[in-house]
Amino acid sequence: MDMLKGEQIAEANLTDWRKLAQGLHARYLVDDFGAGARFVAAVGEAGDALGHHPRMSIGKGYVDLKLITDDAVYRDGEGTEHVVEWVTQQDVDLARRITEIAADYKLDADPASVSDIELGLDTARSATIAPVWAALLTGSAEAQGRGSPSDEIRDATGRVPNLWFGDAEETETSRQRFHIEVYVAPEVAEQRIAAALAAGGTVVDDSNAPSLTVIADQDGNRGIVCIDLSAAKKD
Picture: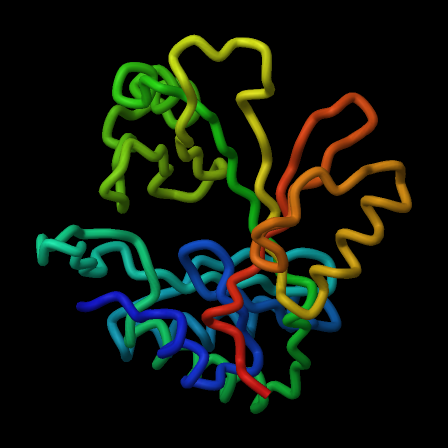
């Protein structure tokens, strides 16, 4: 099934959901664990009917869901097809059904609270070092390049954050190589950045803002606040 572009996701008008990194994310507020379990069971039945299921977790007062297709089709500029992890129409269809189920259970969505974390490592030798990180993070060589046309490390069960590799010169040794990317809903990005600045951080690169804003702590360590504007609902 073809992956959807950001504009197509925005047009779906999924009010309860936000596109973060590769997937759709939602949080629903529940009164207690039992209510969350009953909601999860209903979502599971809906997934059975559609032959597709979300990743789910229950915490105190909430249920988190992530929708992503493991075998979406991406076509590069030359027309070559790649199997990737991304949002497809089946994710949109199930997201709509889950929104209906949540309404039936009288659950409120909290889309502004969703977030996703990825790790970035700058290197000139991703193919060489990726097997080491696949082994360390997941214990499986199959994690290298899983759901991506690159050497990115992705655990099939989502136990650990994805690790992707950025470009760096072979001789570079002095600058920070690892960084964290924090994906948030578009409506809370400014608040998240402001909180980091109030805590003593500084903006060191906003040339790609608001999609990417690089924040440094007092020691110069960097993290990036990320939003996907292409998939956001247009007012």
